[in-house]
Image (cartoon, rainbow, N blue to C red; front, top):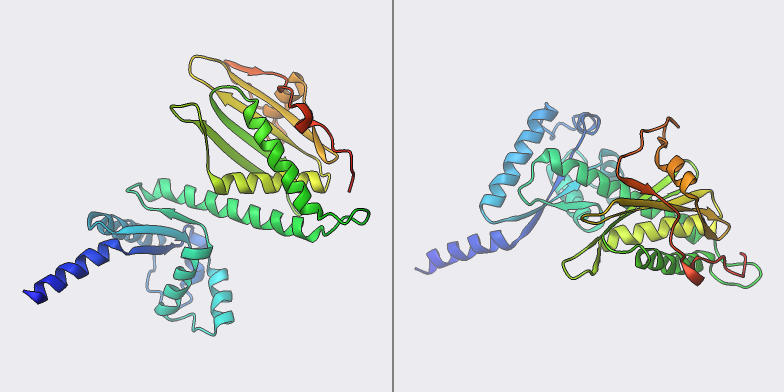
Length: 297
């Protein structure tokens, strides 16, 4: 009887333990891992099918599983730093455990890999964008004239500005995009703010942190860039408006400028057909939060 109880307890505990699977999302990364003899998969499509089957099996058993983005280059660096043999399965397990705490992770909730992979990649891009923008902000140091930490001050201003932009948007769901011209490429951050049944704004904290950091970087470095807001509410026309980054603040765009910005492909510069039932308009007045600060760093 005691033996049966222990078996039952082990099964219960296995269901309670959250596991993480490191996923090679593309063919290039998969080929990079094939140089290790202990990595026995030889076909990426078959590999993805087996991963999906494993996820479904764990879910059917009541186990909680998260999926992390497995990067072969980061794995090689991890093994070099820790002195682990990269051609050992246990090293991959150690690295995946590390990803569970530091890398982008998406919980498996029964969705197909075709749906999960884009979400995981977006999460990885978002984290990389935040880390890069945060590093650049930290490098700005203190203001030579007043001693204020430039990055921290810009983040505070960006936080207040974001709250004001969301508060003045009116009813409905909000989709906000911030782009900042930076080296080596333009940083783009997206923020979704949806209303619940009680009219309260719901934000993803990680998404909001990344968005605020990118906006702060643009303001602190006085880089070219802009903000575009789209609001959607049942029974009404979607509204699109925006601002350009100017100095350490923002300036409203005209309706024509918003139309041009929204209907131009960022990559190619080609015109995109405007959507029907969309109102391209001037932004609401942000009051004091939208004003340029008196002090310049």
